[in-house]
Image (cartoon, rainbow, N blue to C red; front, side, top):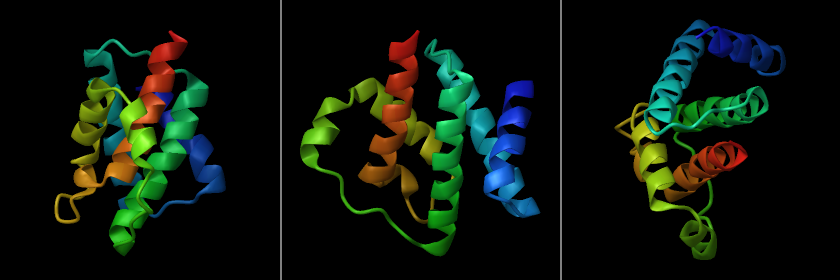
Length: 121
């Protein structure tokens, strides 16, 4: 999990976090790592950084009750079912009250990170 600590430190330079965000963010990155490993996806450092920025932004949106605009259905159709399920599995840990895992836009964006990582291997 040294990679996760490095990712957190790097992202924190541009997006400072309070202690609560830091705990939530680290936990979420660990969940991503475990779930990616289960489906044999290796995530590069560059992809970790990109995904990390997205996930921290997602945490912040959820806490503020904000939602991204609906994504074009054509884009949703391009994402594999496996990556959407993986994405929803990760997102359910952010905030069950706001049903982030049922937000198609957040799920599609995260799924695209997973697909990119998978296709890079």
